[in-house]
Amino acid sequence: MNQTVAQFYRDNPRMVSSPFGGVDGIHEDLLVRVWERLGIDVRGRQVLDVGCGRGYTGDLVRKLGGRYTGVDFVVSRRGIRMAQGDAAALPFADATFDVAMCFDAFEHFPEPDRAAAEFRRVLKPGGVFFLSAPNYGNVAGVVKQVYEGLGWYAPRTWAPFGRWQPQELEMPLTPRSVKRTFMAAGFRGTERIGHAAEVGLGLFPWIDHPRMPEVFQYRLQGAFRLMGPAIAEVAPTLSLHNFWRMDL
Image (cartoon, rainbow, N blue to C red):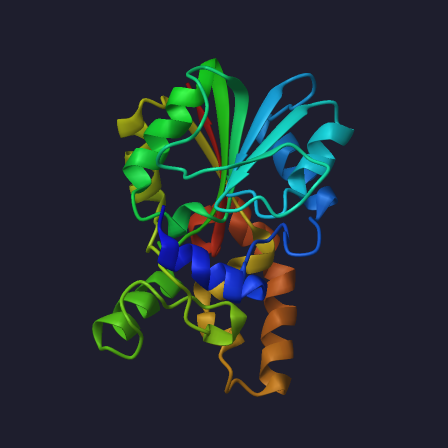
């Protein structure tokens, strides 16, 4: 377990950044739409949520008829099934779950290969893995490489959200690196979609720079709000976040 990462997000809970929320609840409508597009069905299935935070995804899973288990560094909420554990050494037997998920935590794992192998291990044959993760295979990735390379940010800390506040262990994930990691772990099929609302951050990350004048920020946000859906559909890599389905 990486205690540095764990302590950072205990001290900075509002720095948890996901299109689906997670600090005070989740955006259920968005998550349902994404699952429908990727063909992910949790009804009647054993579902594991790795890096679950407060386990709000469990409310939706149970509402839809699934059986939910969350795992994180700490058990932070009562009334829902949660276990303490590390993604690199999950505290579950082989072939326990039908569906496994990870919402915007994978980029903070210091051992992503081991974590992917653990996801593979605890899934039943024919199981499905859902991943929401930031994507740096775009302009934001170039900025990350340059700013960290020049020493303006410490290695693996820059991210374009949160007004560019440094993160803790923000790995430079790309579609190629994600696919390579999960294929090596034994997953065979992958499907990916972009997040239309974050095409702006992927293509022009300065949109959330703390010195960006509000008048320009609002105009840029409005323009990307109009263009985002079409761009994300044609080129999901241009969005800051990608949503993945991995199959065994």
